[in-house]
Image (cartoon, rainbow, N blue to C red; front, side, top):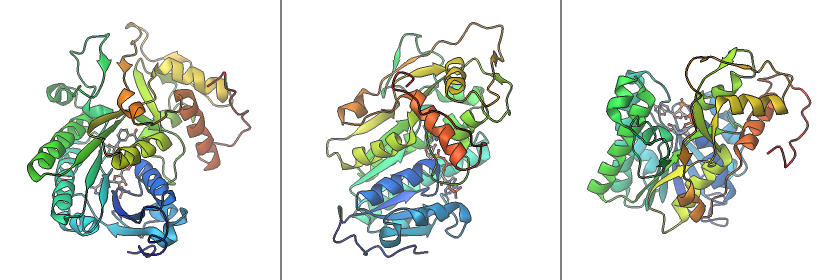
Length: 343
Ligand SMILES: NC(=O)c1ccc[n+]([C@@H]2O[C@H](COP(=O)([O-])OP(=O)(O)OC[C@H]3O[C@@H](n4cnc5c(N)ncnc54)[C@H](OP(=O)(O)O)[C@@H]3O)[C@@H](O)[C@H]2O)c1
């Protein structure tokens, strides 16, 4: 279904290139579409249902009327993906189930990724595919030394993911491995972005899985915080990183996409309480027995070498909450903008 003609404006502005974004209506996908349109690309976005109100925000993006086309494609529909990708100069493959249900997760993630690489190879026009993988394909390794730096050479341990029933990380790891295998076999230029937990304002109306991570600390859904650590990245930086690795001729391999800090949940609730004391933010850890989990070290050097800049984690969290207020997901309440020292 066409939201706008692909030619309007594309020949006279920006790059004049057409790129496909799978999962265009999702949290990260929407931001990639937004930044691509701002840069003058014509975008073909794949969604499962172009008429669903949850994708309506895409029509409101600047440039959408002239240069955004929505195509219906499920990850298990190789023909639909091939049609969406045919004639494109590049592909941003963000679509993936985000669930720990093994049935829903693994097969669509792996088969869909394979179909996308095959479609890129068949097109004869795609010069690079950028795959959104995850920290989940990198860091799930029980044997990593406590002082080791998590970087692009790390891979999650599939047996460990299986044993701990972490089917999301299992699926992302197998899908990324399948992408590298298919790209090598079919001669496709593949670059992979591995974001950590993404935060920041959502363009789409729904609260996705990564935003629930913070929302539950603000809306009273949880009375305690976990004894766990997490790295964070801003959704705008994540989208910019995808476009940077698409455009940079020298980009190759995997890119960890993280602001560089790893926070304990206690740090997260402390930051949230400092900015937003009006919400029922938990004060107690659910684990009062085990030692406090220690943050691991993570490298974002490869993306910084390409010029990508990262927003501090505190600002990612702040922007997330303001976005919840703006959308009415949380009751709006005045919050002083953070000072430089707070960030
Ligand atoms: N957010 C994070 O913290 C984070 C961190 C690391 C990596 N990632 C990765 O980033 C990508 C985007 O995630 P997100 O956070 O933006 O999640 P999201 O908002 O839930 O978006 C997921 C997208 O995938 C699409 N999708 C799911 N199953 C599909 C299927 N069977 N066929 C076609 N499309 C399907 C969804 O389409 P519908 O709208 O039709 O459901 C949606 O557009 C995923 O690959 C995810 O693994 C996310």
